Structures are given as structure tokens and as C-alpha cells.
Image (cartoon, rainbow, N blue to C red):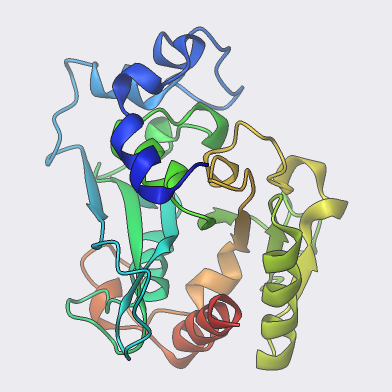
Length: 261
């Protein structure tokens, strides 16, 4: 029987499928790098200068229900944070139970992993599509979790919506969590759409890292630019963490409510 502990012990660089590790899969049409490992190997990029990775794993405290306890069966990921898909870094941290400016916000805290583009311009070059993510820490953390939520950004046009539409598309293979998220957003007054109607954003590829959990399923959130823009008073990399607006916390609280259900 697979358990979180056994998977976290077993999963590592050697456990990455050879085609992924070698970058043998064709890159997404919009991607410059075919995988994270290819990006990390670029001698023109320096971690901490051009990009960063942040993650946190909690102890396996499956037998506790104390307030504020860690729930290591859930991971929140943002594959395209920083300047790539603006606002997803801050949302990843907050959904995981941490204020973007630092410190826990109260209630359960979840594992998280995020990748951030730090370039002054052109961060889209650092986008690696979700099915090609081969970062060992990301794979191990997701593979050892029963639930996963990934946070992404899109334009209204990509979502098939009118310009200016502030909405979230809920996808992924975890149908139970999808339903809970859609219901929570509806109750919170956030426009939410089942991403099954948008094939390019539905997140149902089994190779998508959000679906590489113990259960083979996760939930993918694609938030339009107008939705993310209304969440911050100062929408810059330095300013977002200290200028979160009510719309930010409405979205975060609804997401966490669905996870707590």
C-alpha cells in the first residue's frame, strides 16, 4: 500500500520518468525550456538572481487535529510564480496558510512548492508547462500527497471569456475537490467556471504535476488577469505581499474552506 512516507522516501531524481528527465518530451509550443531541469541547466540563469524556488514540507502528523496543525496530505503549488503568472506566488503561500509577507495566518497549514521568475522583463521565457515539471522536490512533495491544488494565471481570452472578465476556471482530475471549490467560490461571490469546457485549461492530463498525487488526481485553478489584478493594491513583485486587498482574502478563504470540507 502506498503511503506518504514511503513515496517521499522513494521519489527522487531517479524516480523521474526518463523521458521527462532527459527533456525528451516535446516542449509546449509556448515554452522556451522543455523541462525544469533544462531551465536549471542553462548557464545563463542563476538561481536566486533570475529565478527562485521555495517549498515547505511539514512533519507527518496525520494523527493530530489540533488547531493550526499541519495537514501533510495536501500540497499547494505555483509553477509559474513571480513575474510569470502574476499573483500566483502570493496566493500559493496564503492558501497554504502563510501570509505572503511572512508568518502563519491561523488554521491548518499545508505543504507548498513554488517556482518564481525574477527577471526584470520577459519572465514568460521561464514558463515550463505543468506536464513537463520535473523538479525533484516538487515531484516528491506532490507524489506523497493525497490532494494537490495548483494555481495558475490566464487571460480572459485564453479562457474564452470577454475582455475584463474576473473569473477562475477550476480543472484537474479530482472531481470531488473540483465540486467543493466551485461551490465555495459560488458562495463567496467569485465567478467560477468548470474548466472541462475549456480543453486548453482543463488540467486533466495525468502527466500534469497536480495529478501526480497518491490518488492520481488534483485540482487546477486558472485565474484570469482581471481577477488577480483586483487582489493587490501595489501590483509589483515587491509590493504585492504587503498590499493584499479583500478580493485576495475572499478567494483564499473560499479555497481553504473547500480544502477543509
